[in-house]
Structure formats: structure tokens, C-alpha cells
Length: 300
Length: 177
Image 1 (cartoon, rainbow over the protein chains, first blue to last red):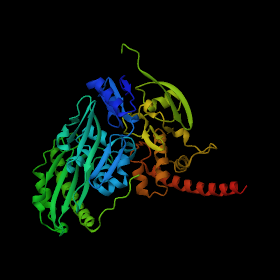
Image 2: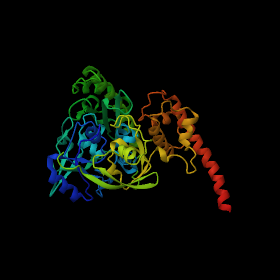
Image 3: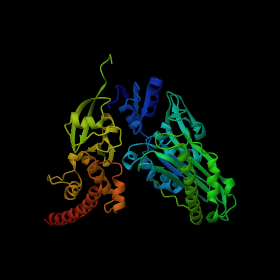
Image 4: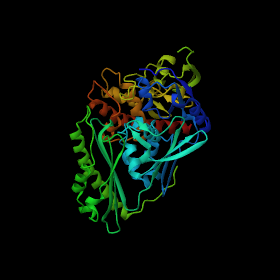
């Protein structure tokens, strides 16, 4: 249960980090929070020859929240994002999801961008980025690119990050006015990987009727699944909308795999139940958000 | 490995004491504390972040020392269970709470609980029972069934408050001199 030997690089600037990644290519892994990577190293499920520890790189820990959305830097810890008041004002969904990411102690070290780069199908933030239609900003020596969430996740534990590239930030765009969100999941043990998790966003029109209802899922597919369930509830008053019908509509899109923790049938059942719950909760939040405009507090 | 293993000369600041050590790049913080510094109060259970026994405070925040490289711990203040006692050697409030409420049996998991709960009570000095339960969900104990641990957390909050009140009195005395 100890990592195999590796050469550790400890850059202090982004350029140094990108140089180190360019030099080591596919033999290297990036170490940020390490809460997924170090278990893999300890169990020797991974034994990269080079590790580029970016914890000493200045400027990567920023969280910038504005009316357009929230940008989270590569070194921002889950706990930093979870407790960031500016981020909570713009996108309550971030904290709603983050409080379900592992345990508080893990969130103190693990990074949001790192968990996205890890691309675990049960990672809560993959569903959040996908539901919001966010983007990942990737840098390499001499270049950078921005990748939409829909193209970023390729498969289980597989993103489109190429050797030599570093995920420097994630962009979570704000939702339209009168939108409420929720995140629901069921796990065997508190803080453990969820058997199913659902992020929901419900947007109301000026009369309090449903204009849009969307959900995204974790642990239900190889890459985050996003469903548009608007057709089942469009035009209905938010407090009397037929969320059961929306949940039944979601069932058509859910085709989970069975594993040791849950059969496919049970997982699908969870998906339907959690869809209904999450949509209802999101609609409540949307209705109350319509009554008060969130104030943007200055960020620390 | 045909070539010698890469090492780093680092300074670890643990419980207020700085120690210079030479460590392999792959050495975990948990092992550095135990084997390089002789601080065997930090226990190593699962070595993949699940059990919580190795939890230490990094700049006051609880983190898993088995999921950090020793090299990454440079320039941070580390507090282990050995650093939780009061300056006069008296048990810290959380330690005292666990002692009074029989919050341990075999004691293997205890260092991780003590560090986690110490940080928790700083953020939330008056937790409800539910919050106390929530605070220790990331730490596994296979003996107690957790009931006495939750009692210990609540008692530790009381002790912290009692001691603060006493210290306040002492401080008033000191400043009047």
C-alpha cells in the first residue's frame, strides 16, 4: 500500500508546470488534491513515472463569481467552493452538490477541477458541469483550449485531457432568472459513492409556470447523462406540476449498468424517484428565487 | 529501479516544532510522521482515505495524511494527536471528552477522531447531536458503535466552553497585574 517510485516535479509557476508536463508527456500525472490519485498510487492501480505537483503554483486557487457564472481554479478545494458566498449566490447548485462529495475532510484537500479531470461517472461535479453546460479550460506549453462539458467527458475515468495538458479551471455558467436547482442522491453509506444521483434545474416563466425542466445523472452512465424533461410539465404551475410524469419521461433515458452495489433495475428505480424529488425541490427553489433577487456579496 | 530513488530535503513543521528531514518523493505524510519523526500517534488504517485514522490538521483543517505526500506538507503547519494536549500537558478538551465519555475501546481510530473533532468544534462550538454525528461520518470505529463517540463530541464542546470561561477569569487576573 505504498506508491511505486516516481520522479516528483514541484513547479511554482504555470509555465514551469506546463514545461514539466510537456517534457514528461504520457508518463506524467498531475497531482492537485490527490484524493483520487493517491489512493490509486497507494493501491498501485496507477504507477506513473512522473508526478507534477501543482500545489505550489500561484494563482490556480482562484474562485471568481460574477453574474455570468463561477470560474473555479485548479487548486480551489471542494470546501473552498462549497463555502464561497459569491459562488453560492450565483449558483446554489454548486454547494448543493459539493456537500455530497465524499466527507468534509476529503473536501478540505480534494479539488473541484481535479474531480472533473478524474471523470468518475459517480463524481457529483461531473453532473453539475454537464447540466449547466459548463466548460473546462485546458492549457499546454504554448497553447490553451476550452472544451464544453459535452465533449470533455469521454468515458469512465476518461476525459479529453491529452498528455502535456493541464486543466487550469472549470467554468460553471449561471442559470436564467427564476431558476431553482437541487441535487439528490442515494448511497449505501453516508459520503460514499452514490448508486444514483440527480441534479435538477427548473426554470419558471413570469407567471410561475414551468418553462424548462432538466436533469443530469451520476452513476447511471459512462459519461454524465443530461435529460430535458420540459415536455412533461411545460406551462404547468410550479406548485401543481406533474413531476411524476416528468420522472416517468426520464425513465426512457435511463439505462444503467448493474454492479455489486445495485442491480440495473434498482438503479433505474432510484433514478425515477430521485428525478421526481429533485425536480420538486428545484421548482420550490425557483418559486422562492422569483420572489427575491440573490444579492452578490463581495468575494473574499 | 536502476537509478537511486529521488529524495527531497524538506522541513516539516509539526506541533510547532520544525524538523529537517530527507524523504523519498513517494513517502506519504502519514509515514513521514511515524517513521521519520517518531510521531506514532497518527495511525495508519486503510491507506486510501476511507477509515480516517490517519487524519491530521493541516493549517488547522483536517486532512488525510495517507493521501498527502510528505513533500507536499512543506510550508504548512501540521498538528497531530500529540499536539492536541494543552500547553501544560493537560489533556485537550476533545481528549478529555473522549476520556470522560468512554469514547474509545481499542483506541486505534481515536487519533483520527480527536483531530477531526478538534477542528469541527472550532468551526461549530455548539453542535447539535445531528451535527456531531455528521462531523464524525468520515471516521470509522469498529468497537464503540459510535454512541459514546457522539457523547464525547458533545461533552468536548462543554469542556471547551468551561475551560474558556476559566481562562477568561485567569486572563482578567493576568492583565490586572
